[in-house]
Image (cartoon, rainbow, N blue to C red; front, side, top):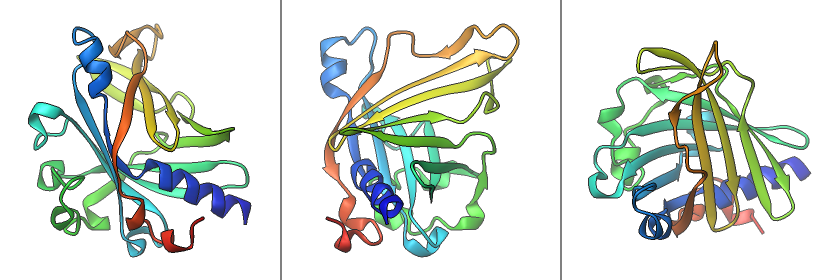
Amino acid sequence: MLKDQLMLTLAHWLAGDFSNQKQAAENPKDYPHIRVFFRPLPWDFFEGIGFYSEQAYDYDLWSPYRQGVHRFVPQEKQIYVENYGLKDGILYAGAGREQDILKTLTPDCIERRYNCSMIFEQEGNLFRGKVEGNSCFITRNGCQTYLVSEVELTQNTFASLDRGLDINTHEQVWGTATGLLRFEKRQSFAEEIPGFQGFS
């Protein structure tokens, strides 16, 4: 089915170890060197395709500043990706790189982040994703904000822009002000995706 092929393509492209080293080297004042890992979860975790993700500064990979779990939900012309937080994330730091740590992650360790799902659509040779609505609330610096997140994904690149806007004034409170973070894939984990062997 078309939606299954679409979902597998998105998963295949997303699975990997990404780095913005090139961007950071060209403009170190505005862009720190960041690593992003999207590691496929076993099929039985969600009875479908899922990922563990973490983002960390390259100099401190054991202390990720963002971790999450993501469940793919296929729809007719788009992929709905549910987002989950970890109840005790420090226990799973490094799971993006170490499968022995990833194997300790179970469904009872996560909780759904409602109104924070991403919606992906394919546009030619890339996928574009954005957070649903304006109700993914995050408190930062004593201010309640809503998340605006945009993602562009190709077979070998991942670009993202996350901003927190004040729920009353809609002014940016946190997030990058210098444009998309641009990552290149260093290593693919696509062979770990359930059903990958049938992918073509």
